[in-house]
Length: 438
Ligand code: GLV
Ligand code: MN
Ligand code: MN
View 1 (cartoon, helix red, strand yellow):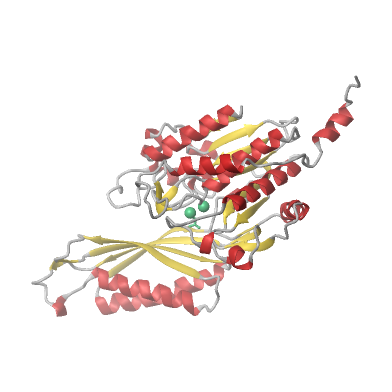
View 2 (cartoon, protein in one colour; view 1 turned 135 degrees about the vertical axis):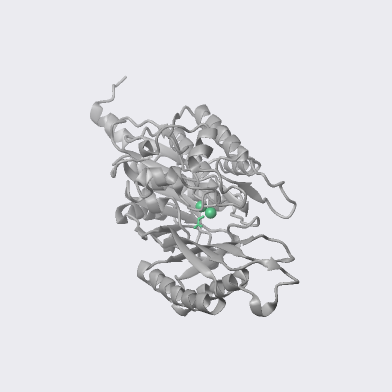
């Protein structure tokens, strides 16, 4: 029998990809199992999922995922904020690895595909690479990132922000609960209770830590389905910003406080919300979007005039300057609302992030993989944000999008077809496999 030379072994390892096959039935089953880790009862109308970071359901889901990874023989590392790294070692384990990943936390009343397709699809991609018999040169890592959703602490992408150094570790630990009734808890307390200890400064990874990062995700928009294209490759991710407004007026008895004497904080907040909508529309550009998604009214009784309201605003654009232009116009309206209604309005910046550009090289690799599978992918902008926005600071990145029904996301009726999910995972696997040979 001939022995393989080092050269032949290297060439064998560098074979692009053997037969990369995805076990679609298993992937669908695992997505369904993961959707069962929810604090909302599964409903006959759709799979409503609520999995807030570090809730008992999130922790149970993490434990289950670790059991799957252990069964695959992947090495596991958890950092101080709960980012979890599952590694398939390459034949040259000292080289910067190739990584993929996403999140498993879900906003209240979410669907079952946002984030989870990237995590379980990433795991299935790694299994497919193993099954194909190719031994990758670079290690391949699946990363579960903590709190992509801003539900619990008011700021999204906590794990990837800390990895990239975008969020100061002491500011992060001092973040307070953003949901009503959770204002007294801090990230420091909550993560310690969940078993994640150590300084948050240790979460940071150096630029260049990964050779490449590719995230698989549902599109969360209608374009792929509308155009009948089974797969998208993201070239840019739009820039999100978050603000918190507190409006303080004067409260009192709903019967006794006379209308001419009122300084109703909720009426002032209503004007502010409409001003935001008006100015976002006024850019005339489809890429400007602004949403006030929470409104917390104090004291919150039907027979009490609201004295204080807190609003959270999410505003995004592909151009940060245009986003800021909307904010400036809103601030002018705030001055007028203040004067007319005799209320106090304060604004706190939660985050204002830059857009990210994907790596032309990784985009080209994914494009080539798609064409090898007979698919002409759509190159597109992501209007949703993703952990990839921050991973872009420690690695060249790209994202693979699959269609979702009606473009619906962040709702229980979010749906992606098993065949599209399997195709996305297959393209992901083949792309990771190729990148791992570089
Ligand atoms: C991510 O969940 C986003 O809101 O874009
Ligand atoms: Mn989401
Ligand atoms: Mn997501």
